[in-house]
Amino acid sequence: MGALGFGVDVGGSGIKGAIVDLDTGELVEDRIKIETPRPATPDAVAATVAEIVARAQWDGPVGVTLPAVVTAGVARTAANIDPSWIGTDARSILSTALGGRDVTVLNDADAAGLAEYRYGAGRDVNGLVVLLTFGTGIGSAVIHRGVLLPNTEFGHMEVDGKEAEHRAASSVKDTEGLSYKEWAAEVSRVLCRFEDLLWPDLFIAGGGISRKHEKWIPRLENRTPVVPAALLNTAGIVGAALVAANPQETGIAP
Image 1 (cartoon, one colour):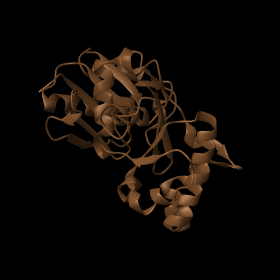
Image 2 (cartoon, rainbow, N blue to C red):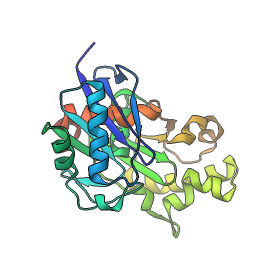
Image 3 (tube, rainbow, N blue to C red):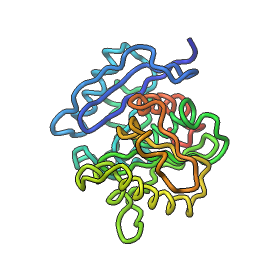
Image 4 (cartoon, helix red, strand yellow):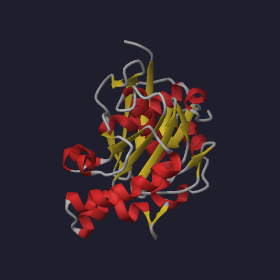
């Protein structure tokens, strides 16, 4: 077994953590999951993260994802988490809850993107990779040769008069009753806009709907290759562990 790291992925319904083999990106043991507290205030989430770390008997640095824009350890938005996170020094609160140890905090889509680039669907691409998570909204991560451009919010980009996620999130497919063919047309529209601005080498499609990729990825009409995410529900944990161990290398400030 190679070098180890620890990642915690804070989601709207559950908080998951595990020890990660940083050579392979695999979880060393089954992930530990605790229901996200209600309300998901900073102190309540920090206490839950501390419980997960204690259960795993981990005593090193910890990486933590949040469903939020995070700059220099401070949460700037609050998607699917309590609004009291906005403006909060998340790194300080989490570090205090963990006895003063080193903690690195980053956006959840950014963590997933780094994990997919290093260990998953983007591992053989020496160029610009864009991960998009299709769910209630559209999360995004941009990685160039292993270095992250943090906190991109491409789901909010306007595409022909609508936010991208209002066109192509998987929730739109469900709420509007779209077929895979109809929804793929909207996804193509969004991807064409993104690629005209970025010229990526690869799109990685994440989110729960990526498990049914054979129903819609072949229908896409944009020019850039699109592949499904490989790590699925472990990507946030793996990316967080990777960043905690290599904050400068991955483009995240310690």
